[in-house]
Length: 470
Image 1 (cartoon, rainbow, N blue to C red):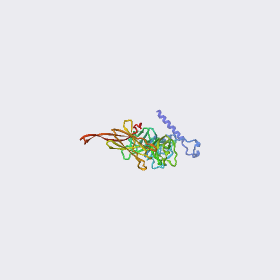
Image 2: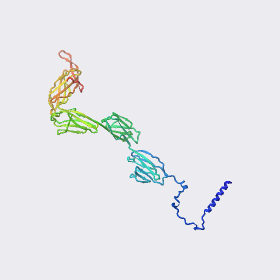
Image 3: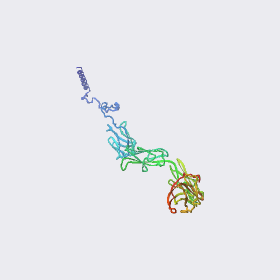
Image 4: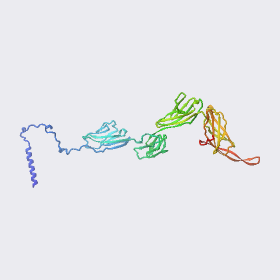
């Protein structure tokens, strides 16, 4: 009952208020004409807070920032899923470059960089597409945006780099990663040979080289073992920096008066080495008759019309930032070493040994020494000197018989002398055995036994024979 009375009272009040607030239609001029209401009169107009409660929520981006790694040539897809953004502008930028505003492209590569409804798609990715600042932005206040990071890697990643430099004696690791197929087997090769073949060891996609030398420098190829005719492959060029290594073509160069002489050393170095020649430890300055030439790693000192004063010890010295190395060469007029050229059995007890040598000055004397191996004393012989033959009559042949040799292994040395001195010694070894042969004795009608000499020549040159008695 009480509730009914309250409702009745409320209706009565509303009725009275409506009556008071109804305008008097009988008198239009009782009130002045309405004027425009402005903020100046009443202050700023207040929004209808009751209607604001039902307005749309602000635009927002639902996607999350991403870091994407793609292989060269792949497609990049960057998401920008939005909600309530129909009435705002949407832009895409890469670093400071504007790519899109809504559906309007500002890119110079419109056929490759395409905006979808909620994505930016980049086809056939290139290295220039890599950026840590791909921004999708909404023109709200404050600005709403999302930032993506994109890394573009090659199909094959080489480590430390495609052109790798190492220092002599260092341990080196070379890596080859196939980014599209990270779990497939890899084969390594060097100069066409499958690795490992020496100081290298292979561990998956890594090859390790222990204490590199110049011989390790070169191209190392890696390829993916996918059993196709044209597998993916690449290579690493390894450069080894090392101090000069010097070799000489001949430790002694034999020449003669008036002859053109050449002393050659072979130099390997990286970085490039400067080569200098010295005579008896004094620096050689090129002049009309003496000059230097080089062909790749070969460095040659040329002496035209050799004189007596040119016979000396010369030094080839090579230097680079990592060190200095040198080797000596002797320019001499003495005969070359006598080279053993063989032998033949003349009769049952005689063996003829043969040597050859070269001398640019006439040979004046030979000296032959031989002994059974293990004996302390040498037997001296003096072979006959025969004039030289060949161009300039500089080639000499020595033939000398050794008689009544007993069975055993022998050592022999031949040296030659000319106006400039004796040649160097080069020992040889040969062996001979006696065989017992039955031959008829026609005087007695019975068989007798004779010793027939048969020799096996061992052309083994050795420097280990004792020469103390020469």
